[in-house]
Amino acid sequence: MVAILGLATAVPPYALEQDEVTARALRVYAPVIARFPNLADVFVNAGIERRYSVRPIDWFEEPHDWRGRNDAYLDGAQTLFAEAAQAALARAGLQARDVDVVVTVSSTGVATPSLEARMADRLGFRSDVMRVPVFGLGCAGGVSGLSIGARLARAAPGDVVLVVVVELCTLAFRSDRNEKADVISSALFGDGAAAVVLRAGGTDGAARTAPRIVRTAEHIWPRTLDIMGWSVDPAGFGVVLSRSLPRFVERKLAAPARKFASSVVGNGRTIFHPGGAKVLDAVQAALGLGHDAVADERHVLRHYGNMSAPTVLFVLERVLRRGFAGPAVMAALGPGFTASFAALDAAGATNA
Image (cartoon, rainbow, N blue to C red; front, side):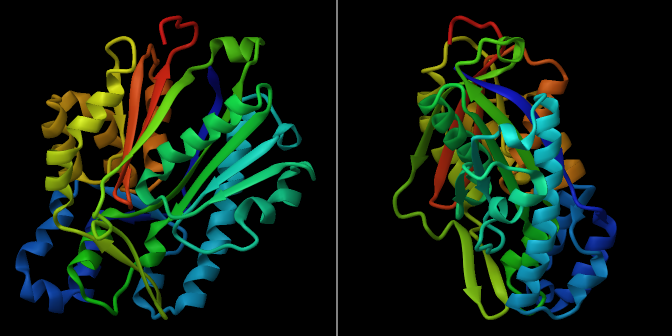
């Protein structure tokens, strides 16, 4: 089994209160909202009170080209990478020089050299550390990154695997496009990071008392590339977000989710990526869950918004802090269109 030795999250310094975002967005997107008045309701119905950003709110009303946005990404992502990674390692009782593999998941900017290479000297990674940068997973990246890290840990028992997930979604805010997807994304997305320390095969006290990843899987639906993703132009990334997403989730999630859950022994809880209030409603409908079953997801959404990949790890952190008895199934949906799953169990469980 792969033990979760440490988990930590981080957010940038600038809080975006939803009331202020709403007032500014209604002004910026006045032309498109005039054509589609119901779009204004998304800010009220998003289930979000506050989000966080690497840049203050005034920054978003100024024009920015691709270079300006990516410079902001490099600056903010490196800071959050360090904060989350150092906190997760500290909770695991380890240091950066103990890390054998670093998996970096990020899809909201371009970094070559990748983030873990840029942070190697600052954090103190060894010169022989294995680097695994991963791009393009979007909102599925939290669970998929955990899955990649678990598989690498399982392949080399005793190695310490550090998974760092960083997304700066606010930098894709576009006031120049005036499309429906831009209005919706301005109501939903925030910035954040999470880091997880994994190890397989340990026999020390930390390994014996840590929650464990016991199984992972993915499911991709054919001919669904237009549901979610990025478009790219000289100003940067532009969000692709189909209005059919909640309905698609409600109709299609149940079969692969139940197939994966059937391979997990015991009746545990679910831990979902809270992509938005409507997506959570669709998840509940698809799986026949009560409102309380996604209370932690709604809490994270309300206080942090949708940070893309790290968001589900914020939910996991909240679940672990409140006392995790296991088992549980984690799930997230992302571009592809893909569902990513991970089965967790509590320390000492023998039926996984």
